[in-house]
Length: 273
Ligand code: DGL
Image (cartoon, rainbow, N blue to C red):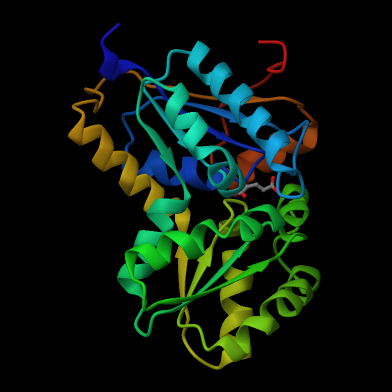
């Protein structure tokens, strides 16, 4: 098979990576995509590095077995904890979600005061802070974990009073930091973007630029495919989603978030590969 006709492989702990898939499908409509959501083991953000690394390697092994041409780590937690190991174990390009988001934030930040919200694990690793200080040492980064956002999104509870109240509680500590840019450092969070945008504007009484890493990662994938001559020529394409646990709830949620009615979702076991 022509290398260019192979699918892109994308993985996350659950439904969050669909925010990346959505962007990939609009930016690269001819590409085929195989998605893996490790729904049996979500969340990753509260687990140790050793565990997240094992899960990430298992997801990668599964996607490799599907003959992918490029891997997207559509999970900030796995990007922070397993990026180097995944890069070393793959013979095709690997795009992580942290670097494109950090670069984009540096490009748009007006005063160099950047907030990052993510899981406990991502914030603890300080991956964004380290990367941004390399890109621009004068920038200040403030990382703040928002652990309840992931279960809210997995539950599909992305509107109304409850997520708004939780967002207020989490975002208030960022107000005195006088940030001008806020990175959504978890691929689940773009699904809560309207609430986050509303609350941060209300709290700061200013316009804060929200960086949705899903957008940045899709552009990075396109640039990499072009640079490596891996863009698919026109023709049939497909989108397949695999999960490690499949509930009726996930099917509904996936379809709502992807805004697509018909696509295949199958349950798969990856820890025995
Ligand atoms: N969506 C993931 C991230 O970007 C993981 C969330 C989780 O499983 O805790 O960090």
